[in-house]
Amino acid sequence: MPLTDFVTDPADPFSAVTHAAPYDYYRRLADGPPLRFDAQLDCWLATGAIGVRAVLAHPACRVRPADLGVPHNLAGTPCGAIFSELVRMNEGERHALPKQVLARALGQVDMESLQRRALYLAGDRVPGSADQLNDAIFELPLFAMADLLGFAPAQWPALAAWTRSFVACLSPLSNAEQLAGAQVAADALLQSFGRLLREGDVRPGSMLAAIVAEADALGWQASGGVLANLVGLLSQTCDATAGLLGNAIVALRAQPELSQLSAAPELWPAMLREVSLRDPAIHNTRRYTAEDAQFNGVRVPAGQMIIVVLASAGHAESGFGHGRHACPGQAIALAIATACLQAWAGALESLPLAWTYLPSLNARIPVFAQGDNA
Image (tube, rainbow, N blue to C red; front, side, top):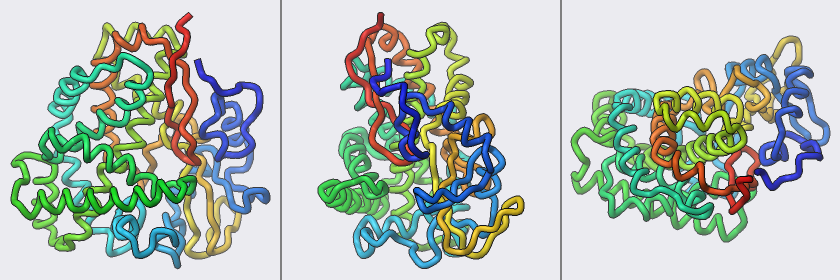
């Protein structure tokens, strides 16, 4: 059972992310104007399927402010160097080619083979307690991605630990100690990928080999950009897949009728796709107007921030984004999460669990504790 209070409504879209039952609130947002200015938050809100899709598709809406490609607190740091190259955090001509390289390489992944490999890895790490489950929902996806990229198993734990530390730089809630740890982790991740590429140890058939081949074929020679986006593949796997997997476990616990899925593994992918719509891992994202923009008769001036409340769009939108900013790794996340659920289903049925959510303004990731199955 969730440990969070069910009674009080979320105060705003940020507090809704970690609320135990935010979806009535999201439905009310969706029933209102698709685009509105929130004086208390001092920004615009895009809500419901119409508002969310309109903003995500609008050419004037960018993922970063026009005059701030890298957040001030990351400028001149290893984290900032990575951030400036990430195709998911930037757009424009400089990032168009690497985005194409990554999309083509990700499109070559054999999902059936990945799911079989992830099933084997998850079977070796079946959680027997809430603490083990909290670690596993982060580590197993990262292990699977590190394996897919071609790292040796002995390297996976360090890569996973560094990635979990690095993602702290992407959250405005991180404290000074977490940000300092993120810088150390960023440097370690860049060095790890750099060594793998320099030493010629890229495993034939790995996703890293596909990325290198596509980069050569399309003429993407910026080595710093390649390394940064390889780190980005791990960081995107971290929170998004942990949230998808954790929220699926919550759905299994909250809806006993889903227990029949343990005997029908072919139904897991459909269940996970439903979870990604009904209780997505990513609830909010941001856009910034590079110029004056019109949305169904509403004018938003240049230089404004818009909070895009993905979770208010219902079945029209998932936490994997939409349009030109749709996450190209969605199929990979679903394959890994499917394998984990299949491997852990029996153990999870008998594991007493309660849950709250990790502090976040955007990502909905359960934190499990020992609970009562009664």
